[in-house]
Image: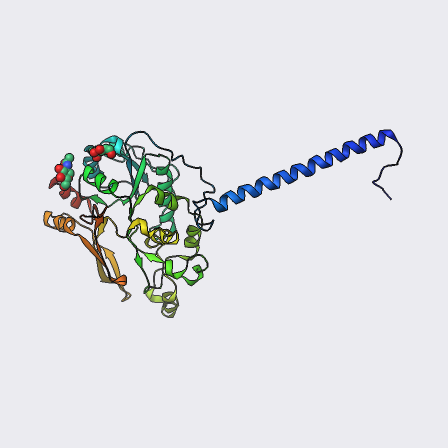
Length: 376
Ligand SMILES: *[C@@H]1O[C@H](CO)[C@@H](O)[C@H](O)[C@H]1NC(C)=O
Ligand SMILES: *[C@@H]1O[C@H](CO)[C@@H](O)[C@H](O)[C@H]1NC(C)=O
């Protein structure tokens, strides 16, 4: 049998025994030190004021952004979420021509590998403004909100970006740059369309451990965020995974499948981008910092599809419908009515009554061309 205890009286042995003891002590002390350091880091995370119950937007994988001041003017980050190119680039060209280059930045999320250069856009404002880490987006899926988060993450790297406006490839501006700049900068709030959604069954009860029903919101994806809210969305790693897993679009109904369709129809048909930002901000108790409306106009019409279920579609403005009277009507809207809450939202910015809409969608090339020639 082996015995660890050394023989008693050899001076050589007792010397090495002492040495061994010291080593042991050192190792134990370093382990204690390590454990204490780790505990302190954990404690810092759980108590940092940025976190929602220590969880909602912990900044884990992302680099910390230095927010301590910036040189020059505050900028508006124009974030374009597009399928491929920018079909209305000619209109944006004239929009940015009248801007001060120090007052804005442009970011484009397009399909992976797509490069904006003289072969793909007529406007030099967009050259090389595409994200290098873009992903493949399926419209109406969670990849849509993932792309939005990538745009925000990229724009947050520039500390002078103070407002973040999300736009699609069919959006047009209704005013000149300066007017929009002053409107958005003049308000310390985000503009986020947000209302209670109780009738459609998009809320999945399996979310309830993280997202209680009372915090579930619906609204347009096209938001204008202040910097602190942009961070909440960009760095959220609690609500986003829940959406990815439990807020999914139902596969389209197939009339040849008969009975199976009944089962399908009972599934939650969730459209992540119509709920994510609104619900996330509600979860973070930030609704007091919002104008609960969008600055991007969309005209919705209801149409019957072949499966006899009525569905809502945004109208596309073409040459005929983007006539000056129509545009004037959109610009004249000064309130929005939210049916589910019986709430009339009079459009304010900084407590002053203002027109509700700065941008509009969806516009075809022809529609945008008419807007350009007849004046924005
Ligand atoms: C921008 O638009 C506003 C409001 O429509 C107008 O009053 C102003 O003169 C315009 N500014 C420029 C530089 O065109
Ligand atoms: C640019 O920003 C400055 C400072 O915020 C502002 O005074 C100026 O009017 C802006 N220029 C334009 C063209 O919006």
